[in-house]
Length: 216
Image (cartoon, rainbow, N blue to C red; front, side, top):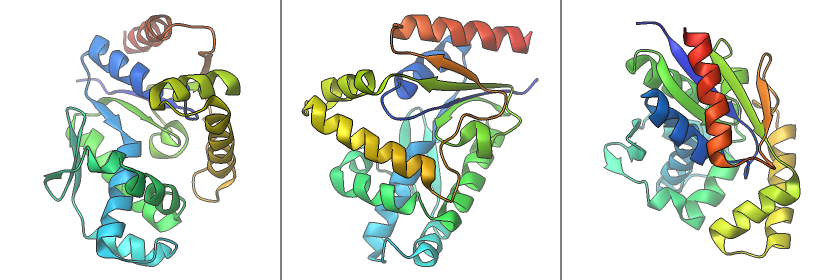
């Protein structure tokens, strides 16, 4: 069976999760949300009580855990932690541990192994997928949108104030794009899609069409 790895990168609020789910469904492929791995790593570190700023200590915890994801559910040592990793403690922890090079190195290996187990046919979303995790992916997509549009979308999802969300997204963008380990960039060879004035269906149609062309 021919490999078909479709990567979706981009900042928060561009529609990666919604789009990647729909693209995976349309193409009949499994989907991997790599952000959930970092949230689970943050949760594991919290449970272990280690210093979240200590790269080596967090990496030691992560190295001893089993991470898996099936049908949109995230598992940590076989426990379904899908709900817990979306809570504020795990969210805050993931922001810290995701900046650690040793932790990212371990999770990249886990993510590659997950895709290999699925016969190298998957839709994978994140912030360093086309640049670091799968630099030779079949199709690389980078989703973007104007900051105010991204903030409006996130505010609608969370119920928070749009101005507050815009500040939060700006801080996240700065951290993601300036971190030493796997910063957020447009991967080489990626097709950039500005989703600001597009519906989800329109974005999905474009990506599915591109994927079918490269897979033909």
